[in-house]
Length: 319
Image (tube, rainbow, N blue to C red; front, side, top):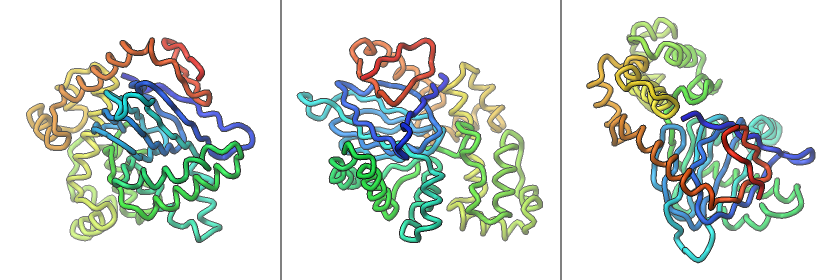
């Protein structure tokens, strides 16, 4: 299932876009866009899909999604059935945030936040409640007030722990590639892994590409990436497999080969260890969520006026 492209219209006088979405049920809408997205979901429970991450979510779920990473939420019930489900969505371009941090050291933490969000971040319990305190300003009719509120939210989030979500994978050509924040030797290794993950990758080959000894590469890689070289390669391969499982009907045996696994048994074993489900179950989750969304589409008429879906087979309905 290909992710639909969403166009976010900021308007000529705004550097962020805030959307107050209110629905009876949040539908499955697998999509991507080139902006960062911070979403606070309230009065809703269901499944959250961020890249290849599939997880349950509940009250005050707060997630930061990086550019071009496919994502969606799909609710199965409201916490208070008498009230609508609500999402407060903030879209912004990371380029101006990084420039702001360059000239204003008070915002240095924002660069680290965007770097940490390369695979998506789910913030700890309590972060969504803190963001609630800023909702009135985020929904102000004055662009400057909304901008300041968004900066305040991003600033306090930069100091909070959060859980990475998606694997570094083929969902976006830039996800999992060098960020410029790692030493150049590590960048060369990451680039090689990103382009050659479907082939056998020996530590000796990666060490030669980095110009480091195998021992030094292992130490520096763990220091900067937080995991071993082998674990990182496996996550890249599984991420690529997840993209093929959601975007295509390619047989699982072929996906295993194209993702760099020596055989289907090894692929199934490592996939289940990573995702707590088999590749077939993973594919069926997306197919099942899509079917449920199509059945309920007639009842879901609210759409963001700032999002224009470029998908011929769906009808766009403005809120």
